[in-house]
Length: 463
Image 1 (cartoon, rainbow, N blue to C red):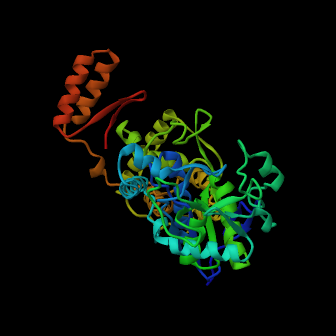
Image 2: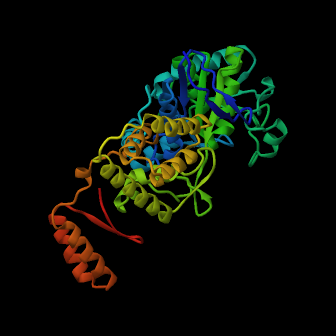
Image 3: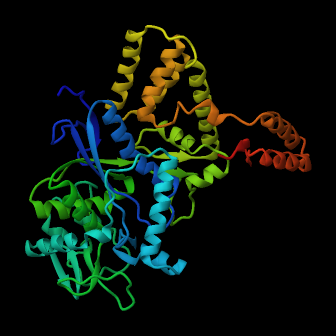
């Protein structure tokens, strides 16, 4: 099988390396998925776009892919870096007066709805952590037997000193780990950097399982080791996640999986950059985030966010602003309109031209998913003297990777007769601060089935 060379940046080695799948032509991927205790925000969704773009690119280049993404529905603590705090699932269950199972079911469905809005294709499998507790217990027992873990009062800790390679992914050392400990170190740990594999249940713990060390629940890190090894086996090609997963989560995962198997499990680690808002990381804990549905309520096409994300290298931080999103929304709308116009024109015999442009696109995505270069090529093609029909066909073909619905039909975008004139009149009323007339026109539009939202960039149609 003569497939093109693909080079990807490996966080573990800090270099680009050639992808060499363990099975010819098939790339097997494990992706860290959502903790389903709250709605995902667009920063989370940017992270989940990474494996989607990876799979789309590889498949465009002729590879087959297999992706597993976990759903964390237990064990993810409020502060995993210091191994302290409550389980996020139980915090939300208490705040919303629901069972953890109800919380997980509700926010899992919300997650699936959000990724559909951004054209993130579903993974092949979505294992739930609570379904793999027996496999987690089996792994923990092996780690204890081999001297990599120890139990104290019903809680089992991983002994980081037993795994000399601990810290290589994140470039941490045991000294740095000690210096980074916040508050008083847990006196039960042999080293402050040791992390929890199994936690003894407290008196009022809701999610509890029996174990050789007493009733308790798993730690977040062991969950991904158990699920990835159980489904993909003892070796697989790529592990993806966000930059915030590098430490402690993925560092711990390497220590667990490799201590059990005795060899390297993941060939290549890929991490997506964070989404920033006014220079600060977008995070649920900070409260500075947007849901994709909120962007839609403001009148933006959800795929405008995808368009915006494609402008930045996947592993760099991206600053989010509504102004930037508005620009992406306009550019996406104009691109679709041009493709619709070009598609109606006569077909030209331009196979060599097609191959030349498509080869450039393939080279961009094969070079560590260089989507900014691919988007620059889109802009260059639009401005070029290439025949209109060829432009439309190329862009529609590339959309298999970009996922922007570039061929969305004109009918889907068309307004009812007279609506455009009413919107133009309403825009003039708003500019003249005639808000009574503006509201009247909005009501008229609503009766026609056109809902509009007012934004700082002007009125937008709610989709």
